[in-house]
Length: 187
Ligand SMILES: Cc1cc2nc3c(=O)[nH]c(=O)nc-3n(C[C@H](O)[C@H](O)[C@H](O)COP(=O)(O)O)c2cc1C
Image 1 (cartoon, rainbow, N blue to C red):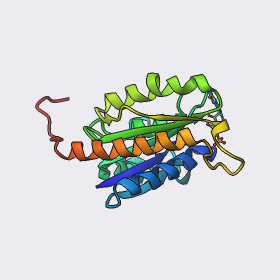
Image 2 (cartoon, protein in one colour; image 1 turned 30 degrees about the vertical axis):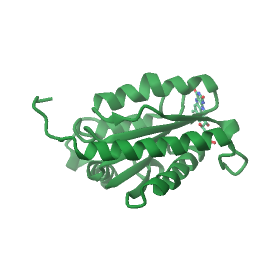
Image 3 (cartoon, rainbow, N blue to C red; image 1 turned 60 degrees about the horizontal axis):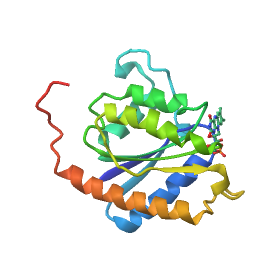
Image 4 (cartoon, rainbow, N blue to C red; image 1 turned 120 degrees about the horizontal axis):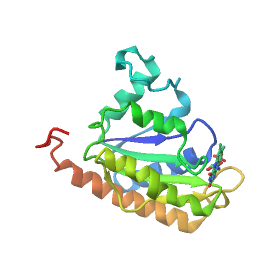
């Protein structure tokens, strides 16, 4: 099973740090899973403007291909202006609506304000619901104070929640294997 761990920003380091920690915990529960980190910062982004996929640059086409090939996702996002970064939304806009259908997804996010964990609930989850993902019931929101100066997560509770998220993600991944990706409707 291929899992894509998406670092959804081109700015900052903490989002990537949480993702690497999740990767370590998923490996503990499911060593057989093929885990790959996709950093949006490594790509040359173009705005989605309705042109055919083949007319976008290689970077954009590769992002779409890697999303399509994956069987599950960890989406990591910082909070920007009370929302997700534009580059992450633009990436979602590139995808065919069936790309992530019935595939397991877990969310991790971080921000400078405690209250903005609701961005996950109110903004990121509805997008993944639109894609009909199997979003795990637990997500992890970290605050800048949970990291030390080298961007290592120092808070034990955060570590435990990331471990639990990894455990549930692996169970959702197992569950998704038995779900047909074909649908009876035309949507
Ligand atoms: C443009 C911008 C907007 C931001 N807006 C918010 C915000 O609305 N709420 C919040 O909690 N944090 C906000 N932050 C803080 C980031 O979420 C924080 O920098 C990031 O989670 C972590 O840090 P890193 O930059 O050290 O990787 C913002 C940061 C930037 C650069």
